[in-house]
Amino acid sequence: MAGGGFAKLPGGSVVVALSLPSPPGGSGVPGARVRVLVHAVNRQRALTRLRNLGLRAVYLRGNTEPPTPDEITAVLHHPDGLVWRSVPDDDTESWHPIRSLLRGPADHRAG
Image (cartoon, rainbow, N blue to C red; front, side):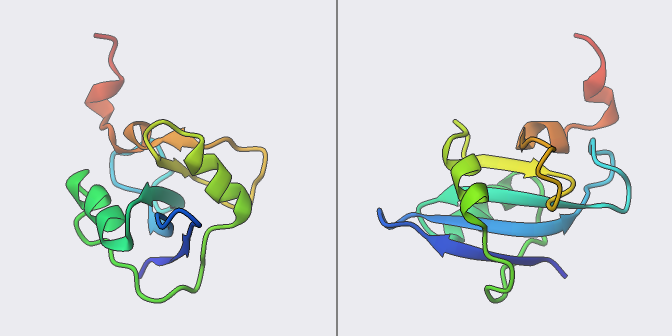
């Protein structure tokens, strides 16, 4: 089950944070968990953005792991408003665009 939470921003939008298993074929370590952050108009729209990317079984139940202020800053400063990192407690790892997590091994070839 995914742990996660949300934070409502003063402008009315929300930042949703989810801890998910690394997708198979993604660039994360197999069996590892990743922290995904999504900025959207509301919680439903944030989850829809993830489902449209192929993460179909993503649900937010409760607010047990809301985003930290640093996580909120990271997602707000990213142009796509959708970022991830594999080690959420390691401040030295930077946030990555969601494209780099979801691309399969065939996408790593030079085009």
